[in-house]
Amino acid sequence: MKGRPDIAALVGSRICHDLISPLGAIGNGVELLGMSGLELSPEMALISESVENANARIRFFRVAYGAASDEQRISRGEITSTLAAAARGGRLSYLWEPEGDHARREVRIAFLLLQCFETALCFGGDIHVRRNGATWELTGEADRIKFDEPLWDSLTNRRTRVQISPALVQFAMLPEVLDEAGRTLALKIAPDRIIARF
Image (cartoon, rainbow, N blue to C red; front, side, top):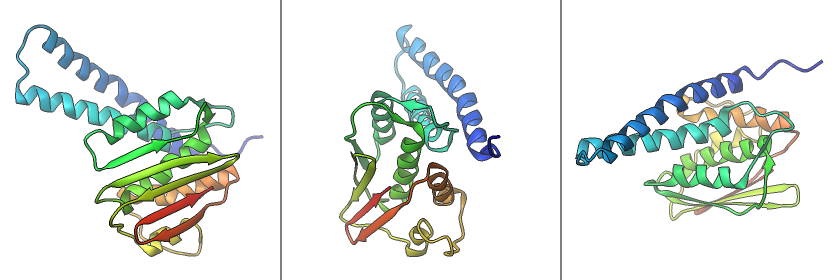
């Protein structure tokens, strides 16, 4: 008998699934207007850019917050295109080094960690994702890191109590997802670098 379903992940999957179609339709509509010879006005450019950004975030959220079963895989192409879209126009760059397909559960952990890194690298920086055997390593580097010690401590110490706002939900979900995958997180924090291994 399987355990209780992950309601939060199923809700995340449903929301992302339902939003992707209308966003795609808006993007197609803007493209068709462009093909009809209509001059690209600043307003149309803003709509087009907003739809692209929303699609990128939805794709990212679908991996990070959506349901992931033991047998599901995700291709390197899908991962890198999602990260490239999410980084476009932002201050962060993502370098995904692992080759081939990967278990969706492991990629989900990596994406949740990327969101945790985003909070610390809010002024910009580079995030590298590597894999050595079964061990994943994420390194975030920046000139300046905004580090909330109790928040990061809550990822490895269940006794640490922190107030979680909607913008920080990844810090609440990550320990649960790690447990579900049978993984343990190790962190190293420096003034200009965060290293996470699982």
